[in-house]
Length: 243
Image (cartoon, rainbow, N blue to C red):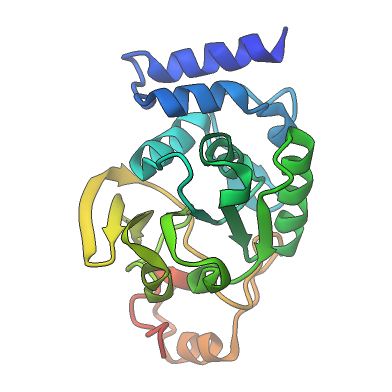
């Protein structure tokens, strides 16, 4: 079947009352324009479910739509995507704000390479994708009007909040075992939009595609001291990441 028809059907289902996750004209138009098959393969492209790719979870279209609706970017906004993954959400944003206005980062080098290749194939080569620790953001291109974080943390990383424009906003899942989708401004959390379930943000020394995640020396010491704890990365409520 024609991919354009499949895209139209996918977005129509996301707009329908049964799901009702796409409300904005910009998002409806952008999701209909982006060839999702360039990012996830023909067989899985228009199925509304998540799956694994190179150790990371590729978001289901309904989850991606929910994040993007919360982000609510304006045309020509400067946008940072933390957790580039396969590059699909960056492409949808690029369709709306312009590819040159979108930067994306991921801590896993193989995903960075994958995202760059996918974005180029789909026609969004101007999106910059870099290998970085997500908690540090991309200060070279700050300030950002919008920052989207596709991984969970107990609190918004300070560096990301500091990279927001004065009237900017950051959207991310907050919490550990119980998470909520939050909108964060430079003044703090401004709104919570219901429950979600995301993987924790990885930290320096961790890679999504390794069999067993490596850890920094400091985290190893903390794990040894706190053996009763079993959470990884930004799920750790007892580590001061800004030290």
